[in-house]
Length: 299
Image (cartoon, one colour):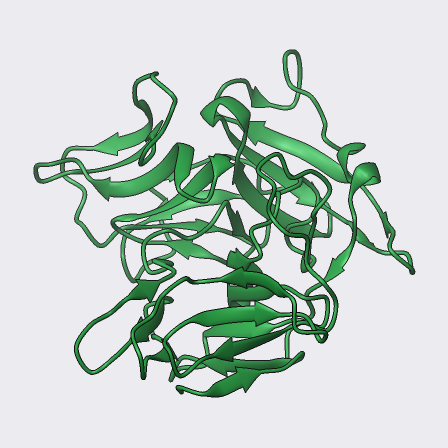
């Protein structure tokens, strides 16, 4: 509500308890799906998405080409009476702000996954996470009709590519990779899957066994499409839209090894450009060596 705060380890949830807006002790405010890891869909401050962090509740700030602020442990959120949502350090420095000034605005975590700021007359700001599900699908997470994940290549508003599960403009449905909003990319659309007769309530799920699958609504068999990666080792499995707009599936066993370090392995399972791991595909297992650990344990 207007004039209230979120201190470290505090949160607000949607009525079902499926989505949460959480202020982590590491200084990151996150909207995430509780049932899948958790799996962050939006963060403040904006962070670089580093392979190897999904499925275990870690994000990184190892490289920031756009000059965004790094998270500061102990930071807190203030929903100010002037309508601005601000992330402050304990010393009062501003890390991030929504830059909205509609007095009396308040925040609500909606049941569709969208974090919305509203006043009595307007909706000045929202995370749009009811449609934009972030940069990855983590183990157990579902993407429904007209939702997408995106590769953020330049800054928060310039999306290089996005993977969208949507109506094809007629009676069918398709899973596509294409240029996102305000994109600098100029390549066309890649069809991962398309059906001329599929109902609009089919869904895509990143299964716990490592298989990325499309099912008809309300069913778990038979599948309409699958990546065929349902033999992964124990760990967190996630689908990620990587460089160049390539859909990739990884298995991660990354855990904290104390202090600010991460240990474990990241295994490449599949991509739409080269299929199962092999010639032309590379592992990202060494990429986490440059990462700075940021604790994002759920409240």
